[in-house]
Image (cartoon, rainbow, N blue to C red; front, side, top):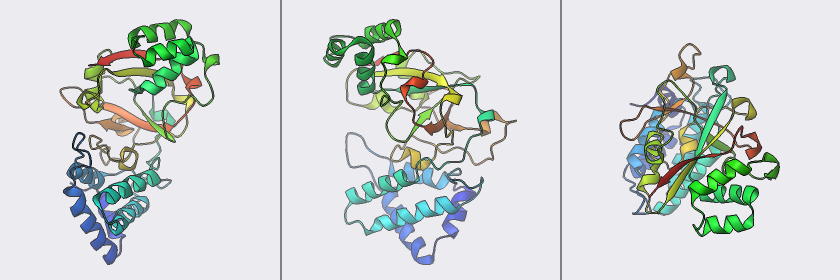
Length: 290
């Protein structure tokens, strides 16, 4: 069901913009993806857009101005002449509005955050920083197994060996989660990827890895609700429910992943990207997914 924010944002469009936007949503609903090996659920992405309730920028909860601008950008995508250009147009629109979710008050968050990454590039960078170039070469050739590499990383860990450009992820913002009463299967890469709706187990690649980075909440800035703009073409994303953030109800103070399988929903926020110097301990290897 469309959120009140979405309906109010739609009302801010001109009649001409509404017509263009409606035509764009018809295209999106029938869009099955550009890569048949990784199909994109256009209907699900449209449902997410219609459910968005926290894309307010610097405005208050319920302010539709920013979401209306995103809808206008989507309507403008119709000027494209091919499905590929329509697809890239939506991605560009999302990038423009990424990081504009409602701010999450620091007092509503725990003292520690967790970020999970499947990036072999980041893992290889950490191996090189702590263990040297020969170890990096062995890791890249898979002669150094990731479980062994992360044990050695833990034993040789020294933040002074990190470079300022070594960061938690790509882009200006990153997703993070945290401990909560319902817990998560944090020692099982396959189960955790499902709990966090990370489609690692769906990919055709072999030996996917997952590792955990822990850091203080106060070490990073810009704690916000994740929105459809942050998710882009990730159809497994689900917008946070439309309720005002209330410190007396912790479930209202962050987004929540809709898990794949019988796992409890997992809390999620985004925050500004940061150097790996913020880590409070060495990265922990969760496991591989064959």
